[in-house]
Amino acid sequence: MSGYLTCSNCGKENELNATFCADCGWRLAAGPSSYGQQPPYGQPAGVSYHQAPPRPDSDYSYVNYGYKNPYDPVEDAYIVTNIPYYKEKFAKMRMADDKVTWNWPAFLFSPFWFIYRKMYAWGFAILAADIFLNIVGGSLIMAILCGIFGNYFYMKRVHGYAELNRRLQSEGERQAHSQKYGGTNSAAVVLIIIGYIIVTSLLTWFVLLPLTWNILSDWLPELGPFWISNSWPW
Image 1 (cartoon, rainbow, N blue to C red):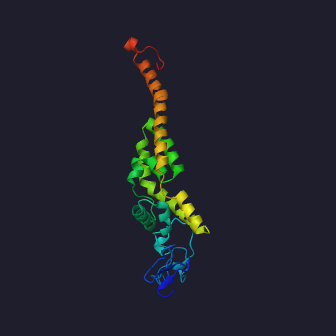
Image 2: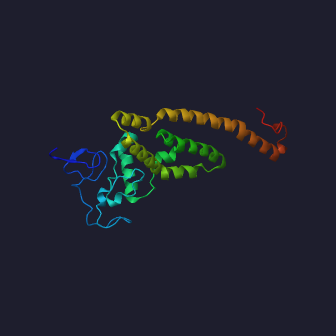
Image 3: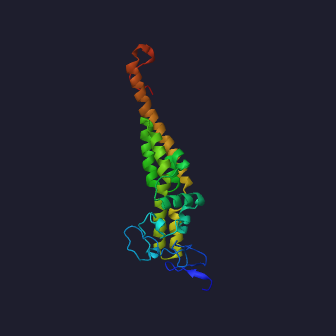
């Protein structure tokens, strides 16, 4: 079609001034070329590595060599909410080949942020660890780690689902996949918070308070009649 650049990877027609394909992120032939530049480590000289085949297993650490646009438009269907924030964070990590950023919601609401973003395995694992760490006093360390690496774990998840999306045959399948695995889940967060309150209340009532009662009964026998027995009275 006249006036457009056709992507050699997916066939989408792009504007003439486009550097990357708006659909798959492939570097277009008319964009800035990598010819004459120093090839990436391990790549032979003289190879047009700016048109290297896509690598579905990659974590985008190769974007500095011109393989792909760090902004992947397919990921938008899985992020859904707060897209500009996460696209900026993802691009910075990919361009710097780094895993460290900062995410305040992941720090403040560690397990619930993961569940909200549909990272259920991470969310339940952190929730279980958080219940234990609340007892021994180490929950702050867990929260800090979640704040530092939360965006990285989320980027890996979104990228993996975006790559699976590209392998689906029909538009209907792709939409169904993104609706199932993308976006957020507020209802799950509400249910988990209710369950968390119930579990922690039961642990407090039947474990922590009886333990405290027994310890005080042993340490403070001089209180006399106040300590009726060494067992939890309720």
